[in-house]
Image 1: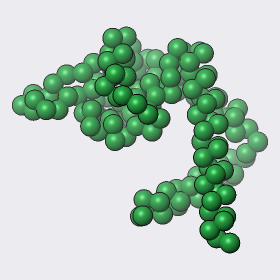
Image 2: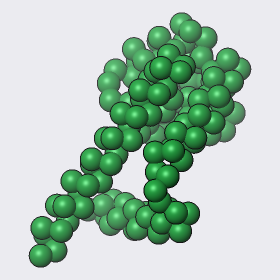
Image 3: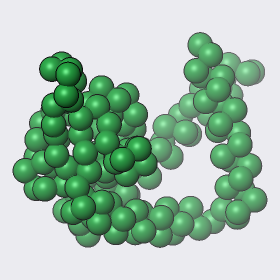
Length: 146
């Protein structure tokens, strides 16, 4: 039935996502001394206009981070990967800005991340990728309607 197949799909998606995240996190830690959560923060900032987001914006956009964002940002700031600063005329909002060091680290990690993704999914063709991406995007639209 549709219900049973939807549960199987959910389980398979969860397993794939968890397995890939473990691989990526392990590789990032081994090669760069960084976690998937840190990679996620750097990735979001790299794509943002002027490499800057408020803490609220960053928190909403993060995919991999599952914990204390403030603590994570503090540690990353101490390492010179980002800076936090008060927004002029708004004492409640803080901006998070990517530094040159953070950008350089992210670019190196992103290149390796792409290679690891390719290796992990080597049994799929480009056509498979496109089909799977299209189906997952449809699924996400459906999920976000609920």
